[in-house]
Image (cartoon, rainbow, N blue to C red; front, side):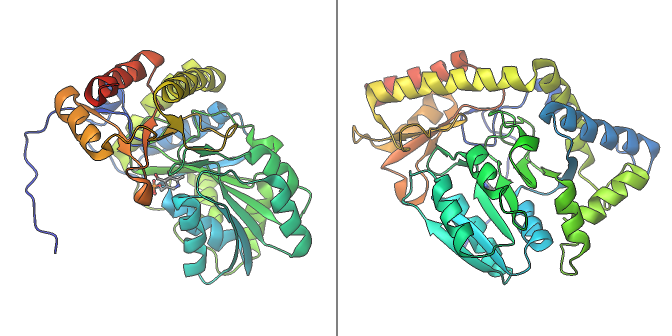
Amino acid sequence: MTKKSEYTDDYRDKTLYLPGPTEVRDDVIEAMAEPMFGHRMDRMTDLYTTIVEDTKEFLDTDQDVIILTASGTEFWESTTLNLVEDDMLVPTSGAFSERQANVADRLGKNVDRIEYEWGKAVKPEDIRAKLDENDYDAVGAVMNETSTGVRNPIEEIGDVVDEYPDTYFVVDAISCLGGDYIDIDEHGIDAIFTSTQKAFAMPPGLAVCTVSEEAYERELSKDSASWYGGFQRCLDYYDRKGQTHSTPAIPIMLAYRKQMKHMLEETHEERDKRHQEMAEYTRDWAREHFGLFPEEGYESQTVTCIENTQGIDVAETVETVSEEYDMVFSSGYGDLSEESFRIGHMGEHTVESITELTDAIEDVAGL
Ligand SMILES: Cc1ncc(COP(=O)(O)O)c(C=O)c1O
């Protein structure tokens, strides 16, 4: 039984190297401290239309954009409800893709899994073989498997799914969008979503999803679509009023506005470059001292999963780095907790800030 453990005013600030939430700029945190206003006021229309249109510009997409008060998980549910009548194909290769499949199971869909060993990447030819065998309403795939540090070849998978016009392609890009460039409109993607606490480097509480015209149309012909995350409900409300269908987390949207301006200033391409540099630095460091968990050639640009080849005590190292250096990184996911550990190099981090963490790990682990 969980007991209450009283929240106090006495916590030391820690620098976050987690695979989300990640560090948020001070001015973005400060942007939340505004007097409250109503979600049907003109000020709200200004705020919501600004963040939606800025996001489209940043992602360079012609698709519609929904920004919803929810964590990213909401879009596992709503994209499934909106697009899948019966059958869905989900390649699973880690905790999050397994959960995506599980969500669709729970919604009563027939889920066909292609099961990969954790650490392996999804292969486009396996998707093609399944699509040749069966009719699926949708393929759902995770772009960046946060539990294993694998970046799946979503562009190539999308090009395959695009050859099957009755099958929609749904992409969970939660732990990489904004830190790993993807041309959304070029690869047959019908919906791609993220959460604000990852590479967007905002506080948690909002989820962002792009929606293709075909996906929007598809939902119109379905009577079992999601209410809260219904494409039609969200997008029609935006079209008519420039607002959200229900009361949003206004302070987080204020933070979003501020951070998206920073992101536009940096540009998507430059953000991608900075993340590439951080990923390369972290991989080189990992290869020098340990090993890499993901299949070669499919390493994530935002989360490096390091194989604990030295047999260090991962839990103790994480704890000591937190205690002595006020920096927090992650042990391996689930059963991999001692076999691996993960460094989130996303959002506003730089090679310099990542180096501070790797120096601390070297000190603590005696490398
Ligand atoms: C790949 C992936 N999908 C889904 C989720 C769930 O996101 P949220 O906690 O925002 O619902 C996460 C969270 O870490 C993730 O990394």
